[in-house]
Amino acid sequence: QVQLVESGGGLVQAGGSLRLSCVASGRIFSINSMGWYRQAPGKQRELVAAFNSGGRANYADSVKGRFTISRDNAKNTVYLQMNSLKPEDTAVYYCNANLIPNSEIDYWGKGTLVTVSS
Image (cartoon, rainbow, N blue to C red):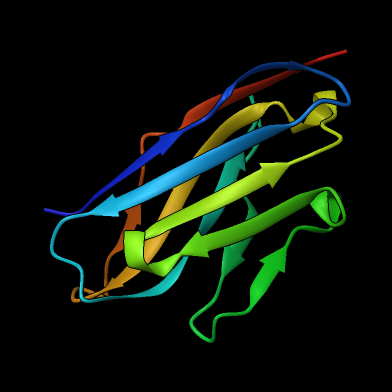
């Protein structure tokens, strides 16, 4: 049973920083892709940052230069360092992973809430 567990969300003032973590556990041989999505109230879920199957990091234009994704393959963990946070970054942040075995499945965490006050 694969699980993705996020942590690190919270309330922060505009201009502040937070670091999110996501740990994948269970029967995992390797990671195809892993990253972060977010969903703000009344909006669709959107990509924030993710490593693709080639190991390249992709970012949403809205977070480029402010957010940095990193990973620890030995720990099946991905991080999201968020700096210069803005109120429009307020959302539930979800971890997403595509794993070996079971690459036909997209795994999701339960999400962690990030609230940025103005």
